[in-house]
Amino acid sequence: MKRLVFVSGMICSCLLAGNLFDYDQWAKDLQTMIELNQNSSQTIAGSDINKNMVRDDVENYIKQKYKDDEFQKIMFLEAAKKIQQILTLPKNADKKIHIRLDRELLQVYTCRDYILYKHNDVDIEKELEQKAEFKSKVLNTRARLQAYIEHKKMVPFKYSIPSDKELYEQKNECEKLYSKIKSESKKTTVLSIN
Image (cartoon, rainbow, N blue to C red):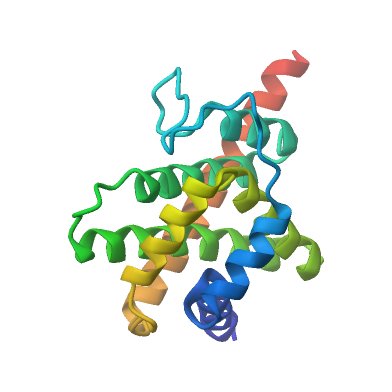
């Protein structure tokens, strides 16, 4: 049963990650959500003062939005790093690099979704809106959105389904990460109370 839930989550994430839909429509829908921030750097890379591979505006947004949810904060920061790597790839980057980064991003989203759906009573519609809002913050200029669309065009339409062993390993890694974050979060809470 747990494998079925995990596989369903993987398939759902693949579908939601942009592998089986109309890119033009997706781009139009996302563009309606984008608010061009005149104060942000207009380069694709943007400003990253602390050099952690997450644009400062995105990092501030994530830390504020998920200040009370360490797991989601860490997962969205990791997703932001992956997207930043994707956006700043050289134009002549090997297709294999695009595929690897896209799969890594998908694994971050899948782990987040798996944990949220397993450990929490979540509103799927709300979670989809949060991902869309996150992407609108990360892809908040036409140049960034276009770079992401060009990246998605380089990625194969279908991913191969992971083997049972790969699914098991991914699920275990995700569970370990979640447990570690929860454990560290509890220690921080205890330290702040004392």
